[in-house]
Image (cartoon, rainbow, N blue to C red):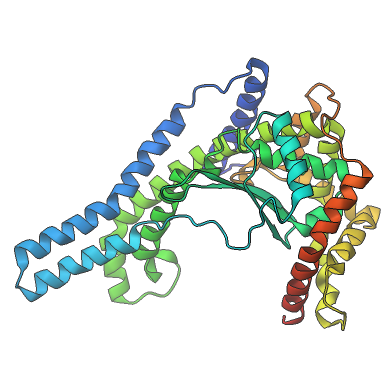
Length: 382
């Protein structure tokens, strides 16, 4: 007997399959297919972003017709304040970013990768202690778009030179794959929608199984229509963003394989499957009296490389069982590997010799020590 699955999960799975099919079609035709659903998402976001403005204008109108009445004026000012709270703030570039003068050798490699794939160059790099890498764009007022590429030093320490090129090429590929998750407009819409949710979701609405008092029940009933509408809009945006973001991930993987070679990108996927080992690698450090420094990243890398075969196989089995519907912006790693295996074998276009690799490691060393010390302090404070 077939297992009955929730409708939402079934739709997630169907969209994930179509995202992969669209990515394959894009590679075969050389151009992105029409994306009317993304236009619909932008229209929805435009309407969402209009709600704080309309709320504030309603408050101004209410004040204008009520003044000097105290109740009407207070209510109108409340609407103005709500509009101000709901309106998204401008996305700011993180302060802890590094420019070309800080990391000349790393930026030289990034420029080679971007030029090889005809992609825009990264403007700044941000380092952190995660087992991850990411790309983002920021558009300050009265200034051009800024492209940020983030590198987690835990992941960086685990990878060899071809894998490092693969991860940098993948993130650079997001600058040309038109991933809506990396843009600012749709991001602002999600922020505004989340703020509406925070304002509307009183405790009784958040948790229908909680023991609620009569006032909570009255509020829940009054807000039921608004909450239902909010969930519907959020679900529509989720499905649209998930589809296009997963397609962008596949296309970025293809870009990565074209720059670093198919083998290096597949080995990068294998390294990502082992990410749960990073937690095990740092568990014992909290009570250890060890000096601060970047050695912790090398320790985690060694633990991952020396993971017992049975644990590594367990992580691979877990990845094999992962359903596409359990991820929003990223397809399962095994699906990405299957996609890469269907591509023609590609030789690397960008390679890193030992001298260049050593120069990059040298300029990253002080940042590695600084972030390692911060990570160790957090672990010891647990």
